[in-house]
Amino acid sequence: MPVSNVTPKMPFHEVGQGEISADLLAKLSDGAAAEEDGTRPIANSIDLLRSADLLLQGSGEPPNRTANLLMKVGAANLCVGRLWEGHMNASTLINLYGAPHLKRRVRTLIDQGAFLGVWGADGKTPVTWTAPSDCLSGAKMFASGLGTVTHAVITVNSGPKVRLALVDVSDTARADASVWDMHGMKATASGRFDFTDFPMSQAEWLGEPGDYLREPHFVGGVWRIAGLQVGAAIGLIDCAAAELRAMGRMHAGPQQARLMPILMRAWAGASLVERAAMATTDAGLATEQIVATSIAARLLTEDVALDAIRAVEQSIGLRHFDAQSQTGRMARDLAVYLRQAARDAFLQRAAEHALGQDGGTWGIFE
Ligand SMILES: Cc1cc2nc3c(=O)[nH]c(=O)nc-3n(C[C@H](O)[C@H](O)[C@H](O)COP(=O)(O)OP(=O)(O)OC[C@H]3O[C@@H](n4cnc5c(N)ncnc54)[C@H](O)[C@@H]3O)c2cc1C
Image: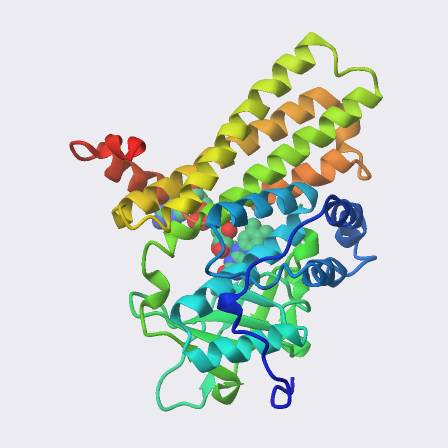
């Protein structure tokens, strides 16, 4: 993509996010079924976000506002939300660790149509680079947005000295979306990308070895995933309630008794997500406190979302499992999205902080 003759308006770390209208959310929701069956490219929805200035995530943006936007998009279309979160995550890493010239270049790329992702999960042969080779080797798996993401922040080598590089991933010959044969989140095309003999001339190092793992930005950033999870759970309940109203069944006491407690817990989860987001900017909090709050948000919203899926199955009944059912599609996307890395290790880490020392639990009131 040529970058030379475009003057960047502003480095993107100084730009705030646009607004999100009800009309835009309705369009995202309307596109989801066709995006799942492959008759409409998900890039159309990404273009809608771009038109609303939502691809220029700013580091000056209050994180609770970002969390709120993620919830709304997650409720409307979780696949689009997942891709948008990847773009946001990549933007955040570039803002944190990128040299000024890289920040300016990425802003220009985004203005020209680029869309970002973060590809960390390695295939059987991890992505590695050994000096003085001029090529990468290995492959990424679960690489979201194949064919839509133009530039990815990838992890290179593993362990405590893992490196980050920004790479142009628009070479579709290296991408294999067919390996993403999942029950849900089909529209994200989260497949394999082959970095065998990938020229280093197309990669730019980002930050120092080990930066990727620095807290509170690494595990401390899972509040963004939590925002999508709880947004999608609320969207699922909302859709189920609309369907039940249309059938004249929403006023039944047992339906209310099943769905309302989950909506209340989702509400509490949404508040915890916003709190975890704001914790990342609170200089008065210890790093591990920020991380534990983010983990709590991720795991609470996972539980609420699992309960939402179960309750909606019981409330809607068999028609929920029809291939054309909207609640069915939302539930299968959500069920797949909830499978995020290392949940049990995260739970132990939060417990060590909150329960493993005197006064740890009092962090709740700080
Ligand atoms: C829709 C979607 C899009 C994605 N997109 C991307 C992407 O763009 N880029 C990317 O890098 N990744 C992506 N991922 C992958 C993601 O980063 C994780 O690799 C993936 O979600 C891990 O899920 P898992 O359930 O297999 O996790 P695991 O960590 O394997 O957890 C499964 C279970 O095993 C347990 N467990 C884990 N390790 C151990 C152990 N050592 N001993 C005992 N138990 C253990 C866990 O606690 C959990 O109970 C995506 C995932 C999804 C769902």
